[in-house]
Length: 80
Image (cartoon, rainbow, N blue to C red; front, side, top):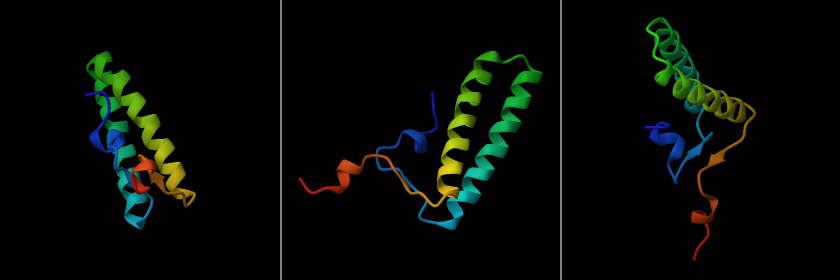
């Protein structure tokens, strides 16, 4: 899997709750630990994917810390 489901979900909406920041802080911590372990065991295949995810988590975390709300597909909110 290239990215966790919540990063590719078409109905994604993050930033409504104060818990979203806590959730992404935890994602950053656990992914950083996964990267550390992958380096120790020479798992370059895992390392590359985890580093991409870590950058995504940082971007999302910075966005919601600034008070922004992230929507996956805003066109779904419009009536057809």
